[in-house]
Length: 186
Image (cartoon, rainbow, N blue to C red):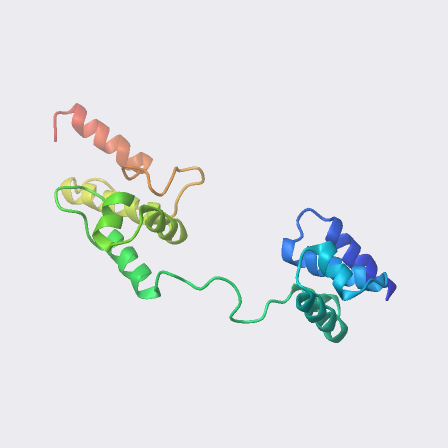
């Protein structure tokens, strides 16, 4: 039992250990010190049935059992996969009337969700790459001489927020646009 105790003590002391695992490790360590379930529950700040459950799981599975979470635990998704897909498709395949791109607020209003929800979805789906690619394709449609070769659609590190008010433009496209405006071409 010495090896698991050392591992559990390390987990409790480590700053990167998830809080849930640290609590479970403290439960087992207190039990190995001979404390009662009620004492452990008060000390750790959990219920007595929780103490009993984690002691049993540790007895059957050892330290690795403390890191496992049973399926069905945790907060359930409040936005369906279909709604996420609709937001991503609308972002990449449409534009709002009279605008060049979607903002968090305009997409949220159009889809009936909050702006924070749209922002989270865009961050998860890397909306900036899609917006940049869309902007470059529009630029190429207006000015066919602009080459898109070498652009793979991935965001540059530190390219800004996915909810920025306007899409980024790749350096080659920006220089082409700047030179065409300098020549008086709209």
